Image (cartoon, rainbow over all chains, first blue to last red; front, side, top):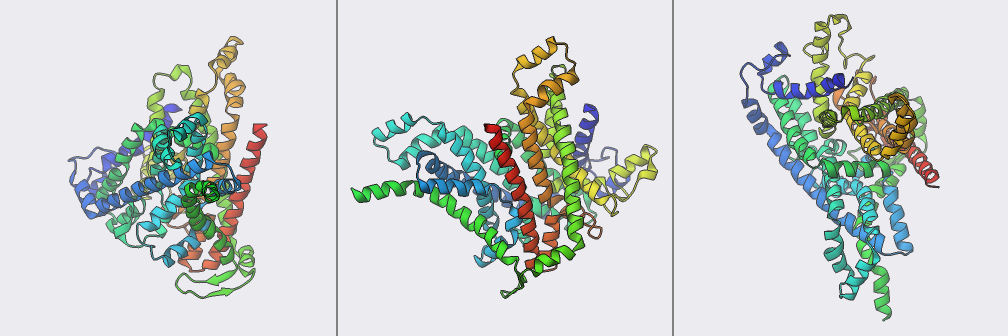
Length: 261
Length: 296
């Protein structure tokens, strides 16, 4: 059973790689065999025909989303874990409730809102909603870590003359780097792969991220399968290697995400 | 002094405000606006809205596509719980068994790989697998002498939804499996040793030790999977180009998208979004209440 499962998963992945090096006709004729002459040119064609632009866009969107989520999330988490008042209670309720809400439900009003703000069809139309929908989970994740920081550390910082902003920057942020990395990786996974917003809020090819870009790439290439498969490989492999190398943090984040989200 | 005190009470707000403001503007405001929209008829391209009362909701009950969509969402949910959650747990417990400890890492990493690929790449891959003429699946069936089973998997209204559901299982089973692996690793070794001393077989140990110990994870992943199944959009949108052939593989989210952005019935699409919201809210309540009782 394990072996059947292994083949079922591994073979299609291998097939992408193998076929991405074939001529387009070869893919349909010799579907199982290895490429006669490796067509490295497919990768160049794919890269030049648009993948490079999608890659850059995905990079910008992902990095900005991470920056926003980690900054606003950790700030809010600090406020929510270090103070207690009626305000923080309501704020916590808003954050927790935010976790239950799905992007699908907000799609149309968000579309209208982004249009009215004149940022639809720009990268901001992805970055801002991504931050908004990832904030609840990550704020709670970081908050649960902040809650475990002993009071004494904060108090001694205050005695040393640290204001609360300084306590946040100089003590809490450096201490919590493992959870911040977890949160950043979880956010990267989301922002790099998000599809619904990416396909609806962006009209022009110039601003498409990889998930939406590949769709128009397919439509543009029609039956020119070699470069399409090369494009798929380009968009999958670097990120696969990245996530496997940070597997430990990623799985920790997944766990937190599923248990609470 | 007094002003210093007000400053002190306002201090937490300074930290919390940016995050909460983003949430209120880009999550909560659209949610409320969506409820309001569902009582109007309007187009994406013109600013005028016509109040129609409950007309959109009445339309919902006369729209046979809604039934198809819900039926497909339910199929999605059932298959996903069976494969991703149940089979994912079985996979996890096999891979955590001592007998496999040497090869487990290879299998574990391989099963996890699809999770790391974006849904677009997965769906494009499967459009090659399902291709009626040159697809891997039909070619394989011919090779295996089962050529009579070959069919246009995505092009037939009978198989399109099942073929789509299968893709999601391929994509996500590794995710749930990994969650179970972590959960199983947390089970104290003594429990297994005690069961072994009692002479319990591996299957029995699975039911006596593993299953009760991962009960909570099982429940959580089931709810998460069911919720995901009712929200599903990407796979049918890409694979069957928006729920085709006809509307045979549509889901609630795809139907909402089609009604709003394709037929330009934004008001009606908002009504469908309300239904999606109600379903997801109900599931969230199930999850929350179950967790409250679990804590006692």
